Amino acid sequence: NPQLETALLDAIEARKSEDLLGSITIVVPSDTLRRHLQWKLCVDRRLALLNLHILTFYQLALTLVLEAQVAERASVRSEFFFQELVHHLLLQEPESSRLAGLHAMPGAWGALLSTLRDLKDARVQPDLVYEGLSQTQALSEATTRDLFRFYGIFLAQKDALRAYDEDDLAALAAEGLGRSPFLTRQQHIFYYG
Image 1 (cartoon, rainbow, N blue to C red):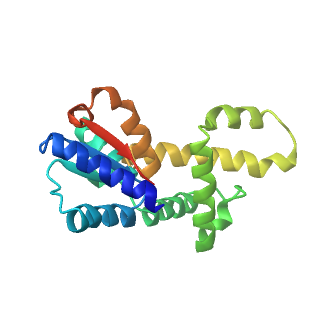
Image 2 (cartoon, rainbow, N blue to C red; image 1 turned 180 degrees about the horizontal axis):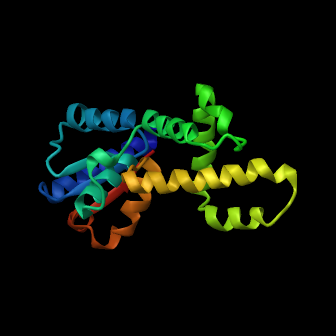
């Protein structure tokens, strides 16, 4: 929306005219929008970016996590890494598992990873669900039991490797919000997008 963009740029310009060295952060949802705002501020408005941080949500989360020394940059892993982790764990599945045959189906690794992430995002506790399912005798529950057992193994392996994805970073960053020197230094924080 051009009107909202103009209003944001006017607000930034006003804050910077009051205090050129004042620290301002703008949080945006995408890198494309981040670059667009940088261009607008530098070229169209001729504004210096000194102490002006334009960050995506991911960049903000990474900044806060690194600042709190909760995770190292190398611990943030790619989608490919997690698909390969799923593949590696599927290779170790017992033959009696309903998931055992998936190791030979590369397309299934990503689908299974999506399911595991959905469970993680919902904060499902695999041990409790698996325990409940283990107490049933229904054959139709066997696949579900195997899935939750595998989910527990996946989470344990992920923790052992200290391997984080972008969603994990956001959760880790949220833990230290109140103690963040970076956020404390900011005179203004804007969200745009």
